[in-house]
Length: 310
Image (cartoon, rainbow, N blue to C red; front, top):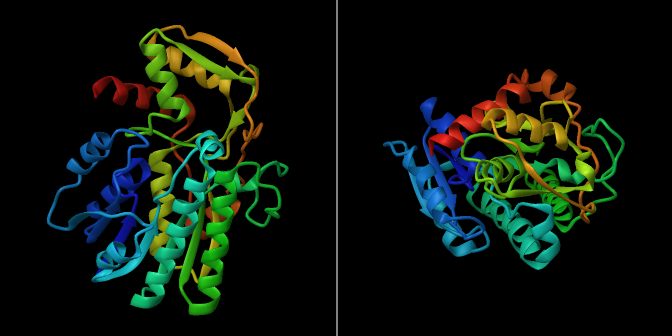
């Protein structure tokens, strides 16, 4: 039997596939290779995964017919495919609803139809909105402030419904600002590194005082794979570094890693952005043995080294 990883050619997905393969598992990767960023980047990610235990299938999670063919021999699903990003979701909310909500529902329906009883859902720290920090899994999710966040809350709700109705073992993982090698070009760490390296100005919103719980990708992978192995009946778990870093500090770390100075263009705060994200990971420590290892002071130089090598 094998594990189906949606979004498996992307940033986090390719790292998860890599870890699963290293441990001898059979992996089926589903990705639609859309143009949110260069499909060539995803194909390069897949080239690192080629082996006898790996199968890659091009399919859209919204297409129930083509998606159904990918479930042959599958006994678990790690669902990481999604349209990501706060600002793009404000610009195109209908697309985000279609992919993130309908796509998740399609996968859950196929789990029901095919008798797959194990589902891991990649959610987001965005679901917490403006809740008080640190964010805890039991917080009331009553105030999403972007369409992206709302679609992730909807995805979580569907997961709970299918667990309740059909006994699907479910882990909901709320991921906090992931960065590292193979990172998405639209995310702050990658984008700022590229622009600073090229001597181009970076856009700094709201004075650069916003804070994020930046989490290195290898730590996220540890949490995802640990949750997959545990096969919880139903759990919601934060996966973050549990350490907030101000945007201005992040920029300084990138400058130091590149030995270059950023040209800053200061702009007002953007709609949909929260001032701070901060994960309470005590539950994940207890349930998963989760323990982030890569501090931001180490992770940014690692990322910069990877960036310069590609």
